[in-house]
Image (cartoon, rainbow, N blue to C red; front, side):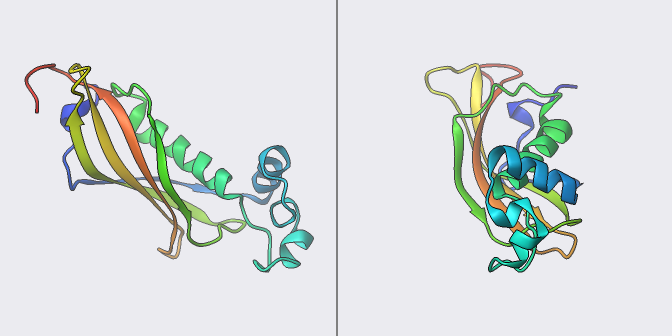
Length: 152
């Protein structure tokens, strides 16, 4: 069964899988997309206020997006997203941290202009292996309705 707009319930929480951040991945991502010293080498990280090599926040967001797609969106009526809000990098993600994703449904509504789809508001929460919150993202996503006109 394909996951669609009707399957979201405000207040529900989905526990998704996780991702382990390896040193090589952190450095490679940083070299391409966020070449700040504390993302590029252990020495650069040690010389920073972080005291060691850390993953770029964009690396963390990208890994969480991958989890979201694999665990929730790949078999859904997803039509994309109008955007993300309030991205917060709360705690550094370090080498060998395993970060898991939780998705909370905050709101949902059928589109007034396109009643064959709805907009679902969620908050992503990413936790490391110590259950410390490392990232939050507020997201809106568009999903097709299974039965347009029957759902409010």
